[in-house]
Length: 543
Ligand code: VG1
Ligand code: CO
Image (tube, rainbow, N blue to C red; front, side, top):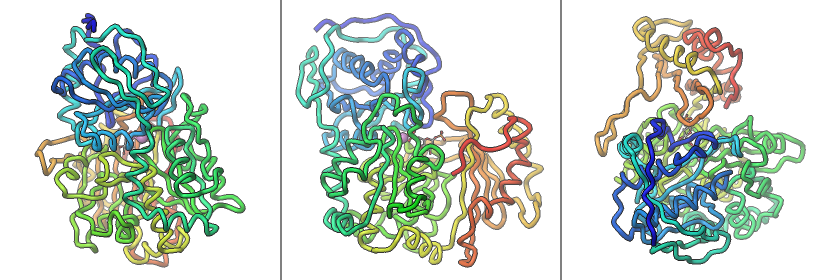
């Protein structure tokens, strides 16, 4: 095996964001760009000689090229085996499942998640540790530091290996095992949910539509929903993964998954609809003419977990990201279990799950999951809902309204301003921070500000501190406004405003969230001077 040591220079912009390093494809195609980052990972994680690595991605443009480079670098860096998904495919939760099941040293996941793909689209890479979860901030910081002092990387000179059939190949001294990307994951799902009950539901006239958005979940949804659970083949739409997602934006929300939304809000709508994102870790849940907010979905899953075989023994606790609504906290209180509030990004849940402190985790950004893996998991959430529906035999809307009647409703919305000028977005954030003193105690109509701060988090397990995680304006009555800049975008800045208020009065639960939150929306625009500073008169996406 001939190991080549290639001289290189640092790029200085390889700082992982909320979920790994994400850049435009042309950035990754710069000389040595990908190799620099991969070597920085290998230099940081310190795997023993002969260790095993998992590798796969969401199938977007550049996935296959990157896989061959990473395989050759893994061989040169002393790995003994790499488990790579057939066709270079592994959804993010399936990669987490493979890392855990085969006890690999860790894994590399190639994805820019919900960001568009193609030659001018986005690409991404992240490292997950042996628990199957995204590297903690301590590790991503160390990778970034390594990328800034890199002077060479190691790679072997070898032909590419074929990826299209499950098989084993030698690459230098290393073994490449091409594995079925679906079966391990599907077996895990079968061990958690009552497939018999879901099969009975689906054969009894209950109609579903799942939109894979031409992204990675197509093969998973076909195998699980159609082959194993007996849903008609046309229950899965856009099921073929495409390198550019069919020119779409694989983000399962009301704006980008409009094809599915139109079906669920149309005539003869199915009873249940769902979509997943580019890498299969997000989910959107719809009923007939009804949208379930991700924050409510987490709370409802928690409140009904006792109906699902894998969770009937009870939940250890629930964690949610700070901007996610407090609906799940109310359930945790009733169940008598602890709840945790973490910064945005799944990497903050890993320690809590590893320590056995939480079973369920969720984010308002269409992310829900449990300790079955260490990533959020789109199809898992879909199966959880189907299992609940199979037991309760009620429409989605009824389940949600009964939940609100019991726990109260947390009205919730997120307004995204995408592709804003970086200076304008930074200006908004600075203005808000500079206004903390004057905002403290300020009165806006019937609302009074109780506290404003820049959220910081101390991990209860390893005591690491993460600062600057979002500006919070908390009101005396429990309402709040949160401002954050996205850490996953690649074009300009994306400014997110999160809005929440609590309504115990059942007679008001039918209100539209935008109406119920209108006062807060007005305050948010006023105190941030957002319109003036960004030149935008409305959000790009409202959830
Ligand atoms: C967004 C979401 C966050 C999520 C992250 C990764 O981050 O808000 O909740 O964890 O994407 O999701 P940001 O920094 O853009 O707000 V995914 O599906 O890209 O892995
Ligand atoms: Co994703």
